[in-house]
Image (cartoon, rainbow, N blue to C red):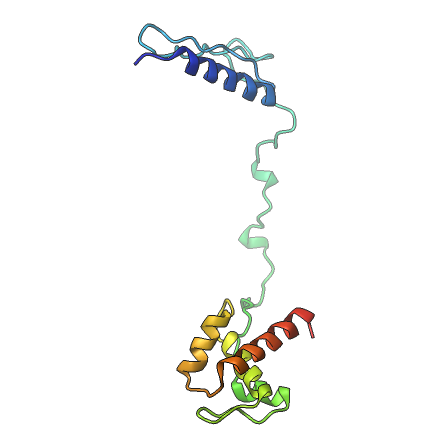
Amino acid sequence: MAIDHRSLAQVTGADTALAGMFALPVTPVTPSAHGVTDAPSPRAVEGADEERVTPPMTGVTPPVTEGDTQVTPETEAAPTEPVTPVTPPPETPVTLEEIAAVAGVPTPVVGEPLTDAQLVVVLRHLRYTDDPPLSYRQAVAAFREAAFVGGEQRVRRAWGSLMSHEESGA
């Protein structure tokens, strides 16, 4: 596989740019007759001994010895009470009746015409029955599937009221 001079220049340029970013010495890439580059020769480490063992580096955490451990042996441990893991209680979904009570409207009934306030209550309930909250189209589909009664224009206005109420943070 022959290497194109243009791609070799690009590789060398990329190597030079990366080396400049990381302040590394640049060794130009020279392909052999077979298109394969030679492996770089190992470099001597400053301060290494004759056996090429790297000297200790500053800023590195020293090795942990038996006396450095933070674990208390079982014999010295004070008796403790059993630990009960803390888990949040499961969230109980808010019912349509609870939302209607907070809004101060009669509970919406399937199949009966709803007031504007009841439409907002039903849409709020349907929107937050799932996580993430339902979109307008998903909420309207759930509204129709649950057989609630309300014209498209009124449902759209109720949704707009719900969204503006959420955006205002009230």
